[in-house]
Amino acid sequence: MKLPSVFIPATILVFALLCLPLRGAFIYPAARVTLGESGSVDGSLVRKVEMIVQGVKCKGTAEYFLSRYKDQEGILDLEAYAADHKVIVTYDISKIDTDRIRAIGEAPVRVRSGELRKFFVVDELRDQ
Image (cartoon, rainbow, N blue to C red; front, side):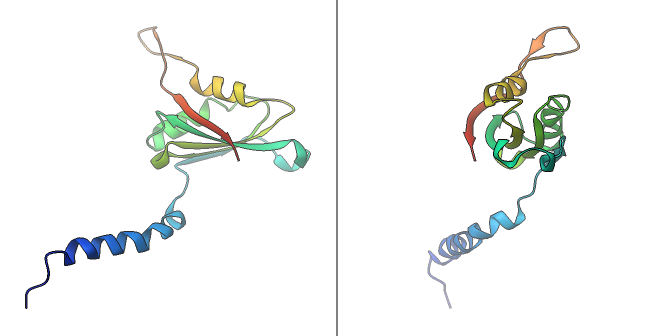
């Protein structure tokens, strides 16, 4: 018995469409850091911002990107999703704003040769 020529592509398409909604169940952060205690901050002052960051592409780059925020006052929580180049920042709006959050992430880094290089670029920044 010969199968129609569209059988295999149609099966793959149906499988992909059925599995797409399940993608969210298997996505987890490549790196996550909690820097502050959100419970100690008035809930009306806590915001989240989602950034699409070119340069965050694996666990190592995600961890390095998050380490840039470790001494910054007002940053409460960071999550990086390397597969989507996405970083979610929870912050205290009374201590830091989104322009400063972007500037920290995009700041150039001095490499061994002494030159400054920009490793990360925030393509998109939106409040959640």
